Length: 179
Image (cartoon, rainbow, N blue to C red; front, top):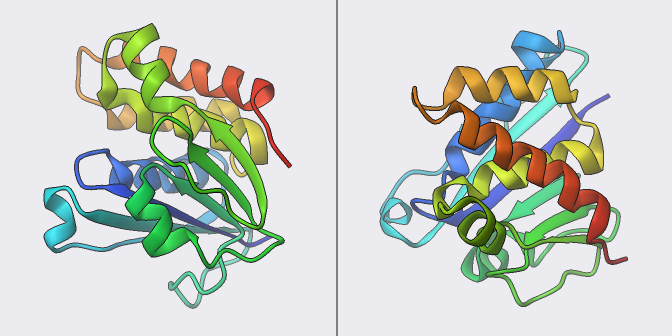
């Protein structure tokens, strides 16, 4: 089954890394196919940035996300630039710490930045919290696969912090939902 995911936030939040980790989990640990794309440019300095991943059971022949099934939005500007046009059948996970708008689709509010700061002491792991929430809410990849992909992708010495962030995401996706 094909799933198109669009990640958006501001430069520096790890938006591209999030898509890379999800794609890696699919390909390396869940025996699926994946293609990841990203936007480079002035976005890297704090403006809206975007990355996308397509996951499928079959080879991905067209690498561009055309109609996302899932959005992971981590900033208001990211929502306005990449999420406002979400179709009503899509699922959107929003970092409710930073995004005030709500889409016309199913919305799952995850206070990722707030939890990263207050519970884990590091804003930088908010993207990992969102990845955990994404996996818990959608099952796009297995929990085991995402854990292995995170461990493959984060800097040495930060593994335990990132696993705690992932687990917080699993927990939050089950607690904070809006329809």
